[in-house]
Amino acid sequence: MSVLRPFRAIRPTKENASKVAALPYDVMNSQEAAEMVKGNPLSFLHVDKAEIDLPEGTYIYDEKVYLKARENLNKLSEDGICIQDESPCLYIYRQIMNGRAQTGIVGCASIDDYMNNIIKKHELTRADKEADRINHVDYCDANTGPIFLTYRADKTVDAIVEKYVKNQPEYDFVTDDGITNTVWVVDCDEDIMVLSDAFTNIPALYIADGHHRAASAVKVGMKRREAKPDYDGTEEFNFFLAVYFRSDDLAIMDYNRLIADYNGKTKDELFTEISEKFDIEKKDEIYHPETKHTFGMYIDKEWYKLTAKNGIFDENDPVDRLDVSILQKNVISPVFGIDDPRTDKRIDFVGGIRGLGELERRCETDMQIAFSMYPTTLDDLMDIADAQKIMPPKSTWFEPKLLSGLFIHKLS
Image (cartoon, rainbow, N blue to C red):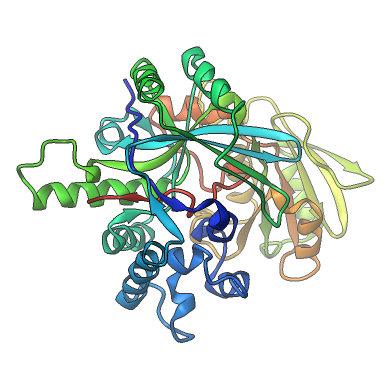
C-alpha cells in the first residue's frame, strides 16, 4: 500500500503565484538563476538558490546560503506573499506543454514507503548533492521542491481528479516558456479520504524525477526521529512533498550524448569499429531515432543512422536492453574509452528539450561527435525499478519540469 497524506501547504496568494513559482534549482547554475530573477524579488529561486542574494563567489554549499534560504522563505510568509492553509488539503496540479497535459495530485509521501521500497528508485545518488539538499531542508525546516512520483492508473483516483478539474482553479497561469500551470484545492474531507484510501490499494510508487531531493528528505526525517525518540509517526517530518502522476500521462524525452574527441582514432577507424556492432546508414538530414535500438550519429557535419545488430544485448534484462546501455557498452566505452560517464569530462549530455540542432551546434564548438537517442519509456523505468536495478546515468529527461514555490511543506 502507498501513502498519500494531505498537508497544510504554505503557498502563494492567487495574485502572487505566477511571480513566486520557479523552475527547480537543479536545472540552472547560479549565474543563470541570478539572471532569471532580475526584476522579480518574489521568485522562489531566492529560496532554492539563495546564493544569488549573497556576494558573488560565495561557495554554494556555505552555511550562509542555507541561512539565507531560510530567511528568504520566512520572509514570503511574513510579507503575506504566501499563506498557510488552515486545514490539511490535497491539491491537483496540471501542466500543459505543446498541447499535452499531465495532471498530478500534490500531497505528502511517507519516508517509510521510501525505505521499504514501496517508493521505487532507478538512479544512484551523489553524496555531495544529497548533503546540499539535506542542509537546505533542515535549515528551512521545509520541503521546498516536490518529488516527481508516478503510479499505474487507478479509476477511483481518476474520478476524483476529473471532478475537480471541472471547477474554477485556484491558480491558472502560463510561464515564459509557454507551459500552462493550473492548480485546484481538494479541501473536502470526504474526497481527501477517498483519494488517500485509493492509494492504499496502489502497490508501488516510482520516482520519475527527484532522487536527490527524495533521499535528502528521507534522511532529514530520520535525523528528526533520532532527535525525538518518542515520535509517533504522525509528525510532519515523517513525510515529504510529492506530486503523484499517473504513468500514462507522462512522456520521457530523449537524453542525447556528445563526445569530445575521436579517442586518437581516424574517422575510418571509428566507423570500422562501430560497424562491428551496428549497421550504419548515411542520412541526408538530422536523424531522430524512430524505434528502440536505433541511434543517430553526427560526425564531421554528417548524420548517420545506427541500428543495433542482433546479439549485442540481452532482451530479457531490463537494463541491458536499454538504448543508453547498448550505446554505452558497445560504442562509448569500447570505441571512445569512456568507461564512467558520470565522471569523464569527455562526454556530455543534452536533454531532448533543446532539440537536435543543439547537438550540431555543440559539435561546431566544444565537441566532435553526437548521438541522438530514442527516449526511454515509462515501462522501461518501472520494469527496472521493479527489478530493483539501476538505470545508467542520464537515461531519462522529463518535461515539463515541476515548478517550485507553489507548495511548501513545513516539517514542524
